[in-house]
Length: 474
Image (cartoon, rainbow, N blue to C red; front, side, top):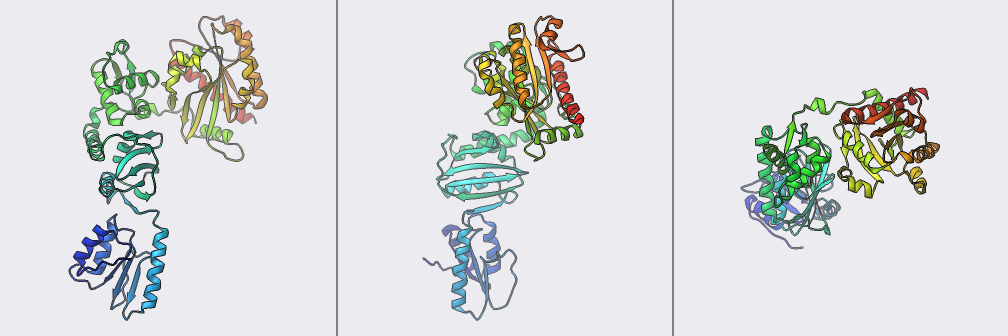
């Protein structure tokens, strides 16, 4: 092991930062900068925060910040065998903790400054950042940022979101990184652009669209010229499937500030309109807290499992599914699968998740479309796990398949009891529909039409109401 000697505390501080030592031993009475002050200074530096310390003094003293089993305080006269044994043990303990080479708080060092430090030192590993219960990762190789991930977001979108965090913790874990390079920009330009977007968002926040506003495309959206930035087409397509600004921002792969700017620019050009909404309006719930709790208990069962369930959509055609889920997009807590907004894609693949509900208390309900073809009978049963309810959708186009619709419903309910709601689309004889669906005059039959959002709301009110009534009856 190589030894480097410093004549005073100032030189020791300089060498410690330059050399990155494995162990630091100092005299408490070190000139210029004393041993204890040097310890506290180096402990705050991410480059030396984990290095074991030995402080030697003529008098006993308690030093704040010492780590048990790692840092050592010895009083003269020294027993060299004891000192050697304790130094050896300290290095072993520090080695076991080396998986976290750098850790600290964002209030002491910003994420941008930390990434700049890792870049200059050509580090390789994963930087984990935690704030307010959320954890993101930045993957680094030879100091360059390969990718960033935060929940479902990645690349610049995830990284720039983390730049907003001013409180929280970070830890850098040195390890080989095999992650693909998804961020193409150089680290220097990336940090400058990220901080620019953060600063501009904070200064212009009141001028940007409200997250709770509802967006609507104008006829001009159908003739958006070619050759514009990709984000323009991305936002236009997302608005077709997501009415609220917050949902468009969340689902776009572009950084949040760029999406807000694009929405504002499109609104200024008349390509879309923004209807202001309050947070209270957008977060209005279908159910009371007690009702949500009852649904959670219904989904989780006696074992208290995860709070997620499934609502099956059984339909006579893909078109009626596409129209129904479009009508759902203004409902509070509803998220639409982007692909399901386009009929051609729905026709190709009517099987799969088309949307989801997030109720208060963290309950997720997915809307899962299944075909009524008899050969897919085993799939009906396979997809009925965590079943909360069934919505049957019929239209003129698929009127001859109503019997298959009922067969599918019957087959699913043989496995698990669940409430069902019936919805029709188009010009259909109501009495004939009721007869075909086996409904009494007292049972509701909903029709999709101009008041689509209101009808969709009534459908789910009915479904949840039946679910809770069933729970009380049990």
